[in-house]
Amino acid sequence: MTKNKKNKPLKDLPLGFIDRQEKELLVRDFIISNIKEVMIRYGFKYLETPSFEYTESIGKFLPDKDRPDGGVFSFKDESKWLSLRYDLTAPLARYVAKNYLEIPKPFKRYQLGTVWRNEKPGPGRFREFLQFDADFVGTKSLQADAELCVMISEILEKCGLLKSEYVIKISSRKITEELFKKINIKDEQQKLSSLRALDKIDRLGWNGVKQLLGEGRKDKSGDFTKGANLSSKNIEIIENELKKKLPETQDLEEIFKIFKNYNFSNFEFDPSIIRGLEYYTGVIFEVNLKFDVKNNKGQVIQFGSIGGGGRYDNLVNNFGNYDAPATGISIGLDRLVYALMQKKEFKIKQSKPVVICVFSKNSMKEYIDLQKLLREAGVSTEIYPGEGKLKKQMEYANKINSPAVILYGEDEIKSGKPTLRNLSSGDERSIEIKELVNEIKKII
RNA sequence: GCAGCAGUAGCUCAGUUGGUUAGAGCACUAGUUUGUGGAACUAGGGGUCGGUGGUUCGAAUCCACCCUGCUGUACCA
Image (cartoon, rainbow, N blue to C red):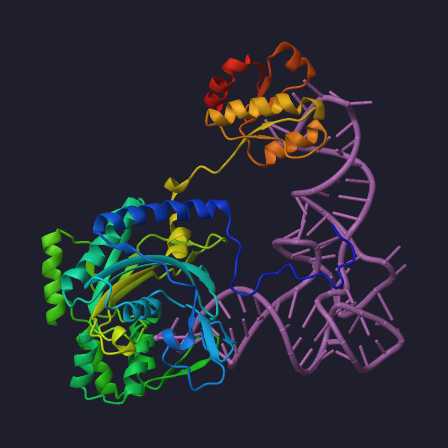
């Protein structure tokens, strides 16, 4: 405990940023290794792009503002604004536009990377998080869209999920497009707020959504949200259309046929899937987990999707004249980790070294020889990394969940038989050095 | 951004209608066998009671403003 708190730097983290512990990182590593393995088998190229991009390269909306804010972290460098990327799709579009002549067409790439969003964090949602993206650029074939769904399913199942624990929900922007034509909504703003309203079905239900399509909605705290102001007749038409159980657009009919060829059935047609992003043009999908996810207080929370994607045929085009229709998927890895950690199967071994206690600095050579012997045999081992009484060393070993402690004091060194103490049972035995590895392996 | 609620030790919280040096549990440190952890016991460290200003003889407690957090909602290109 330090005195004199005044003028000390803050030990707090900025809003929405967190330290991540080993337990979580190991699960993440496990997922990543599965992703890489699947991506190689599916023939995707591995790409990395920088964290920063010119603001104008990853968002067409900012140039005339003197301060680009609204969701991204930005700063002005010399004369240009730079931003931390907020997703991996915009940088991909930039990459393809920049390297169009060299890359194979179609171009398949996957990427793992941290993205940043300057938004209000929520449970399991942070301002810095890891995303996984896989995309096909330069093809209109729905084979690509279908393969993304099959591929993500394979990854999830490799990670240990059962078919009953997740589902891919599918729809198409063409459905809402035709719907707007049918009820004759032309105002872009009105279309947009209608889409946003529809996007909230899973959370607010049809009741809430209808309020948002109409005049507006008052939430639990008493705050009022203005709606899209559609007529009640039109709202009714929308509801009826979107409650249909069968797809009526050509792209969906086709992709379902492809799923059949893959013998892939773990999907659901759900016309209420919208996806917030404006750039989608066709098939859209969302990956939803079906088991309960709890917060740290043990309450079941509304977890929503862990990712999704869809077809965006015009994004690359924004950079120039290359016509590069594309489709892709993004997964929020940290959210997936958060959910998977709650499943019992995910007890991944953390590092728990055997601790060699230090009795005397004069015996360091002997400790090091033991340590070397054990480490070379593949046993996680450490010499107590400090000084202090045996009691303190035992407390340390206990704290780090060490399986065993080796006592190698003067007497033991003289007789050549270290004492091995099993920390879970408390048993203590004198062991020949050549038997040490075997004995320890029994304990671990 | 908007709305509601909250802010007392590292953590979880108590603090009675404003009244002396602000408390507990856990955690931490040191002891209770100078070679033995997880239990127990003893002692100890650690708080400008989120901040600033005000009301009052007196404020953790009342008032105003600000900051931060939680929840809902919006935004999420």
